[in-house]
Structures are given as C-alpha cells and as structure tokens.
Length: 431
Image 1 (tube, rainbow, N blue to C red):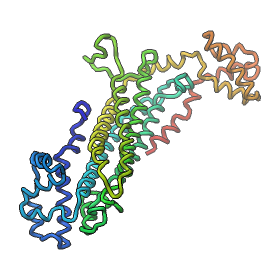
Image 2 (cartoon, rainbow, N blue to C red; image 1 turned 180 degrees about the vertical axis):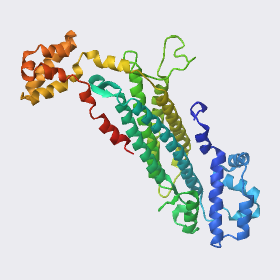
Image 3 (cartoon, one colour; image 1 turned 45 degrees about the horizontal axis):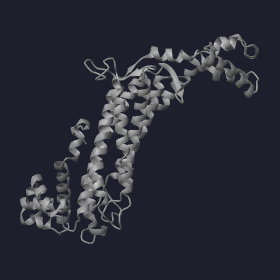
Image 4 (cartoon, one colour; image 1 turned 90 degrees about the vertical axis):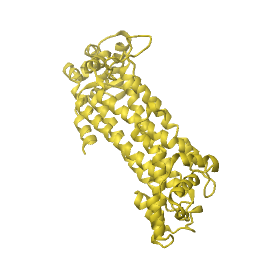
C-alpha cells in the first residue's frame, strides 16, 4: 500500500522485521520441543536461544544469490548461532515457516481490524441515539416512500457492522492455524507434538491435515470477510454521498476550516471522504477472487498462491484498516440537517401518507383494488399538477364518504410512522 492510505500500526505487521521475527520464533519454538524429545542436544538449544538473530540486509543479499527466502533467512541466522545452527529447521520444510507465520500475521491484522470495528460501532451507536427521533423521508428506488428517522438508518448500519465483527472474529478463528508437518505434511521427519507445541505458544491451532501447506479455503474465508466489510462501508458511504447532494443536503461530511473543495470552483464542498471509501471498497473486494483461486493448488502443494498472498495480505488489511478509521471519523463528525430532512419530507405535499389512506379504506370495507384506485387518482394530481394530497382527498366525495374528514386528517400524523422506533432500537442495541 502507498503511504497515503497506510497506518503504521497495521503496516508494521507486514514489515520484514516482524516477519523474520516470527520466523525465528517458529524455528526456536520447534527447537525447544525437539530438545525435549531428545532430537536436539539441550546445549545446542541454549546456543540457538541465546545467539539466534538475523540481519535483514544480509538476508536480502543471500536471497539475491540463492533465490530462496527461507534458505537465505536460515543462512543469516546460522551466521549468528554458529555450528549449533545445524539443528535449526530439523525435519521442517519452508511452508511450515511461511504458512504458520502468515497465519500469525493475519491474526495480528484481524485484531487491529476488530479494534477498528469496535470504534466504528461505538461512533454509530452514539449518533444513532442522538438522531433516534430525527424524522426524515425514507426512499425506495431513490423516490420518496414513507417517513423514517435518521437514527434508524444509523441503527441499520450498526446492526450490519455488528454482523461484520462476528464474521471477522470467525475468520480470525479459522485462520489461526499453524502447520509444522514437514514435506507433504506426513510428519515423517518431525513429531506431531512439535506442531502442537509451536502452535500453542503462538496462539494457533494445529492444521488437521496440512498436506505441506495450510489449505487455502481458510484464507479465502478471511479475505472474503474483509471484502464483505468493505462492501458495508461502501453502503454507508453511498448513502451519505446521496444525502450530501445539493438538492438533498440532509447530511454532509465535515468541511474543516481552510479546506478547499475544487481547484476551479471555490464554492464546492465535495463528498471526498465517502467517494474515497467507495474506491477503497472496490480495491479490497478485488482481492476476493485471487484468494479463492488460491484454494486449488497442485497435489500436496505448489507456490502459485505465494506471490498473490504477498500482495493481498498487506494490501487488503492495510486498506480496510484505513477505511474503517476514515469511516469512524466521518461518522463522528457527520453534519446532519434535520430542517432539510423535514423540508424534503414535505416536498411531495403529503404523498408519503398514501399507504395509510389505502389501508384505512380497506378497513372501511372497500376492496383493495377500489381503494388503490381512489388513492392513486388523487396522488397523481399531486405529481402532475402540484396539488396538495390532503386537500384532494378531502375534496374527493368517495374517499370522504368512506372515511370521513376527521379520519382522513388523522392519517396524516407523522407519529403513526414512528411508533415502533423504540422497539427497533431495543432489538439493535439490546446488548
């Protein structure tokens, strides 16, 4: 990822220092168990523990010659440890180190992302409670439908992000798997207890059948979960972008002092944060396909997945981390215009109450088709001639004869549409 979209807290997970440190931990832990089993002399273990370190520049130089990153790493470590280094990597294969390390990194990244989600959820909940009863128009197909509240919009986002957090927690559990099983995963040259020991120390579970590599369906689940979270972020971003349109202007990104919206038009206040989040979501979702294509490897292993994961591991997690942080700031500072919401709600001069009138007519005994015809013919006068819906209904003798003037007026009460807001909030925020 480019620095513009990278937080150091997430980037450090993917830096060479962290990767090689995990590699060294894996190799050292394996040696600890091997020494306990009598495969490695205990004095050799002490040398590996005390002297084990690496030099990143030296690893890069060796890899340029040998064209193998794990061999380059082991050579660098051996230069520090000395003759006892011959016991490092005993019975292991490169995938044992690479795959187990990748799992650790993905778990570390998931923990950062779960923290991000917690912040987003807290911000959404706070704004939802603030705007629980802020009335606005609900839209379907982009057209005015019936009244709702801005708090209900936010509650919907909260519920979705709560599901995303549970999905990510599940994906974290799925990916928290290690493999120290040797060539083709048979444990021919290393005892299974070594794998169990290393995994326990690293906070992982042993992969039941590793076939030399950890099955990539686990990774596909992880990256598809990130993509799903990104899609939820985009859903919120698109809604805010629509609400910020000049002719709507019900909500708006915070525009800071000194900020400029356009190089050509000084009046512009563009929804740049939400448009950026839409772009980030597209990028993160694009990593789903290669992650799923990585599932089908040749026989017990190949490395067609390797180059892909070197990209998508850092890029997907860094991009989602940035997106969640940006979303959090956006929600916290979002400017809301309740007056414009009411103005827009009244723009269609009462049409938002059409369903209530329809139901009242059916309750009064009219067949639904007849009731629909009566309501629609008055509604079309509002659309086509700019009439007032309530006035047209009161002037329609068939409607008045069925409902009476008082009942018609009662049906234009906004509170009718808000009576179950508390019920929905209890469902969403019960915990």
